[in-house]
Image (tube, rainbow, N blue to C red; front, side, top):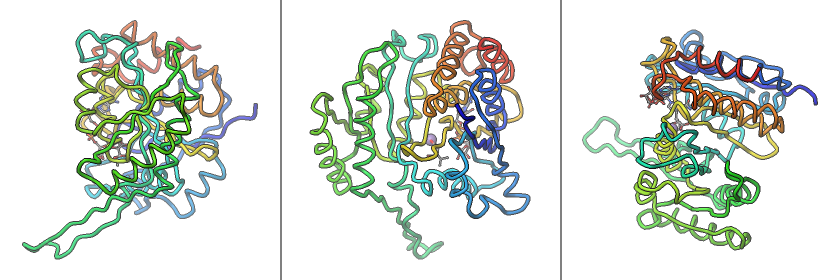
Length: 353
Ligand code: NAD
Ligand code: IPM
Ligand code: MN
């Protein structure tokens, strides 16, 4: 196999601590990779005004097989402009329309819910990643006056909704649960009782696409009820598909079921194009530079990237080693361990080697 070319963008804050651990684990896994680092983030922006240099998205798509990202966000850049241009830039301009966020509990001790075991939490959220309220459409009128009006538009295209809904059904067809059981339900989450125009489009498209997959059960929940069910009975979920904003919100709730944001992995995917992989968490400024951030979300993200690239053996090795680290409490404080970021990376890398 030719070496896979990976663009690595650690970004800001704890991104610079968790990505190096993910990289050492990738190296220990023996996966054939060539890594190229990019320094985009708050430091670069504050130094020379660069968020992303011109032509970058075309370059990433052309020259790399995948992108591994840490996180963006820095209190010195209150507008968050660099994060928007780099992170949302990749998602939107590279058209990475399916944000795949697996939700898997590795050990009962990590779950804040009573009586919940790993087999009870094994679902995936497929978040629309190129539209919705994230498109930056709208404006502010009469800013700074008593009559000020702010409009933030929610854009939903038939093409955009249809492709992500289809992705969810295809995901259900082609992926199994950790225990080998088939995935056979897709649940669409919306707020069509109040947001009727966008809701109508999502409802009609979901019904039409679902009809093409008679072996998969189509289900629906309003997003408010879904949040309640997620903490009441996560067994209810298999594959969830939803819009950009609801997907953002429910995956933080879902992260808590797995032990917190430090455990959650994600991929930003357009089948057949260069895709981008990042932990769900942000740059966590208060934790930065202290060697306390949990690197497992980033490490599991790197395993997800390898699986996407077809390097399945190395991917499985990484997942197994993380599972073992959790079972043996070789973890950071956020998941009741006593190790530092580097020490968790060390342990997992050694376990794999
Ligand atoms: P955050 O994810 O950085 O932190 C939320 C909470 O989770 C904090 O209590 C933090 O300590 C904890 N946490 C997060 N990651 C952890 C880890 N690996 N180990 C242990 N604990 C962890 O979200 P926030 O505080 O809302 O945002 C901070 C900055 O990150 C903001 O600038 C925000 O915009 C940005 N952000 C970026 C991304 C991204 O780049 N993908 C995602 C979310 C937030
Ligand atoms: C995420 C983050 C981003 C989002 C922010 C940083 C723009 O919260 O990846 O979940 O809202 O998508
Ligand atoms: Mn988020």
